[in-house]
Amino acid sequence: MTLIDRVGTMSPFSRSFLALGAQNYVSMALAFALNVVLTRRLGVEDYGQLAMLLMLGQVLLLGTANWTHIGFVRFASEEFNVTGRLYKSFWSRISIAFPFALLCMFALIWWRPFVASYLGVPVWAIGIIIAQFLATFALQSLGGVFQARQEMGRYGAMLVLEKAAVLTLVAALPLALLNVPVVLALYAVGAILVTMAALLILGRRALLPVQCGATRKRMLAFSFPLLISCWAGFFGANWFDFIIIRQFRPISDVGLYQLGWQIAAVAQQITIVFSTLLLPKLSIMVAKGEKSAIRSFLDRTLPQWLLTTSVLFIVILLTARWLLPAIFGPVFGDAVPVLALLLVASSALALFNGLVPLISASGLTWGLSGVTLISASTNVVLDFLLIPRFGIVGSACATVLAYSLSAGIVMILVQRRFGHVRHLPWLIVPVPMVYLIILLVPDPVSYLVGVICGVVSVSVLLRIYGFGKVLMKEDPA
Image (cartoon, rainbow, N blue to C red; front, top):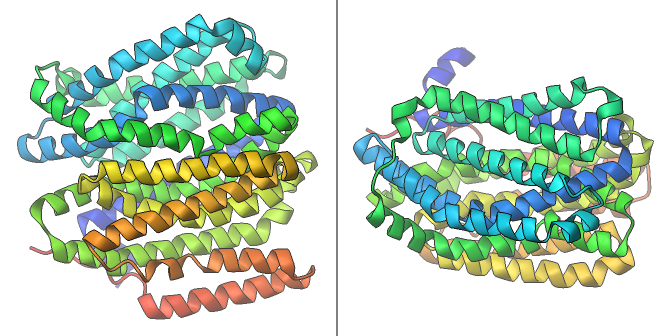
């Protein structure tokens, strides 16, 4: 059977996953290229300053948009599955987010002298931060529409086009005109261009305003716990790490940490794509009570996917020492230890992201908020303990511990409700194992031993769980 024939026998879910995965990897490649251009053209200090500005935009999104996104996709996918439309869900989400957006923008404008001084940018750059936030929110909202309609090809195209637009603009701008606020403005322009293209595809009638009182109340009740988890997630993510690093270390360390985080984030995109694709699918499974399908996901599909991510992370671990300085410049070589630790954290994040859609689809948002709050508190405490003494490596260690805690608690929640998850940690063990070998065994033997152990462990797990059997199955009639 040819590859084309095998693709033709895949279920719609598997074909959507492959299509979105392929587009997401193109987006990842573009994001990687963008970071190469930015590090080469800005230098380590300006690259760190750009990270701080992007951090502030992320804070605005946390306060207004991110906490409503899961609820929007969940309710919109159900509405679209029943009616073929999603007017009520879309405008419910907008009406919930709008007052929060106004409040956040007002606070930023009111405190603009202090914020500009802290970030080291002119006061007028605050307007660019707001513009980039609004453009990203619009882009995220229309991306959620395509997710809910299960048009993953178009959603993936948005990811690709947005990265391509920003990369083109940054690379084409003369070096004399390039500075941190201008780069942020180019991020906003890229998001605006792709948003306009998405609106043209959807058409004027796709998002007509409607009365949505009942849907709005249900979505708000579902999403409100996620407001807590989103803000807790900020304290458990790299954005908060930047603030603490900036307090105790020079801005150049923020740039090094940002690069390590960006490379890890590129690798993490496969976990985000999987989670993105799963939410509408699992929402329907849970609503219909399809226990056998959920068990198949936990017993076969998720283990195979976790093993795939482990292989990817191991390859990056074994090559980062040479590739990172060669690609981004020798000055960024100190980001290698950070990247290595963040890849270990990413393996825990893969497990977390694989299970969270099942929790969200089951409506356990308060439980998810509790998990995020515990993880964030752990990260905050460890940041203050480790960063002053160990710098950016200490911050990466805090991330490993916080992510591992999150994954462990989520496993407990899913085990209590659905079972069949106790075997999953074995699928991510090869990553920390290879990291410890590289760290503890003297060079150059460490990398040879790391390769051997990585191959052996992955081969054993592959033998146990197989590969491709679930992806090639037809959906049940």
